[in-house]
Length: 219
Length: 219
DNA sequence: GAGTTTCGATACGCTGTCGTTCCGATACAA
DNA sequence: TTGTATCGGAACGACAGCGTATCGAAACTC
Image (cartoon, rainbow over all chains, first blue to last red; front, side, top):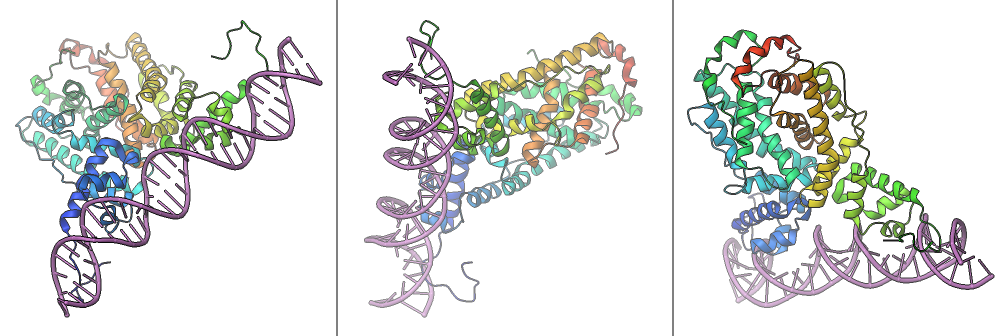
């Protein structure tokens, strides 16, 4: 596109900071109004940039959003609380409203575009779903190494439960669920399944660790 | 609005069949292009009606879609196969691609609008979520009556698992999941949880019916 | 028949968004 | 200094969708 280093390139250099500013602005607008209501003008205005600067870098709205999402920082650290329940809570608690909801808001904003934009789906799967799956898998592996649970063959399916229910709840109510809901899902669904994997009846003898926080919340 | 029977009303009568035609057309367009891409012109054209006829009945696009969805037939019959697993399969199998996917397509089309339209959320919850929840609850109740399982206090949460995962999968892949996926969810998640409700440790003695179809599919 | 209302169809004004183009100012190379 | 490419900002044309207005025909009441 621009230049391939053969020619030293004349004229003013492109300000790389504008790329980051525009991408960040795109994510913010995306989180606030969603993909469909996002306008290039709004993104440029928020970045304090001209629209021409934006179109000099991306072909259009779709490319801008895709690139912004794909440059988004992972911000997903591996929890290590020493217990499966603690790790699961640490991993999913930030999905609630309030604190660190930016990432969740971006996901909600993307929903409207995901339905029909295949490229957006691809980037979304790569940036949001894949990292989360990897962290979940490691959490289960650590629990196995600690002897807390038996190996879980369907860990991937188990990992989808919390995000799916959170997503579902978010769409139905318009906002992310509260912490109590996530606790219920962990304590009443994920943990029981992880602790008593029913496909190998032989490991039923291993269930001595059932005392581990299988309490039911008040609600 | 129109007349309260006091005056016989002059002029040509409204053709009630146009209401149905427009509502049906709205649902079809909704299923095909989604809420945001739905235009009143397209709905009127598909119904073979004029746009004025449409605006004579509804205030705008939002009201039209909301009314169309709320008039949608439930088409959700109570399954009675004699087993919990059979009922669950019968209840959820129509969510897969192919056959009766119209209802699912409408749901997918609604997603983009649900995020910000509270009224749409309300109608959606009433027309899609509530009936489904009721049927699920009855399925669990029947299983309890048959002595197949112990009473499940968190049946509501359990009922959300399949729809949530189906929804999630649909958004991520762009199409409803296949039947095998739903079978896995039922056999590896819902049934084990229903059969071994872990919140009352006392009913652990009741788990003699664990032989009932807890097999794992090949995948 | 006279008056009124709905019908399908079309045209219109309005608004919002897209993507382009121009502007003066600024940064950089030759 | 001259030439070029960028910057933020603003204006532009094109287009799509909404909601309204209007048309001739048809249906219905009086």
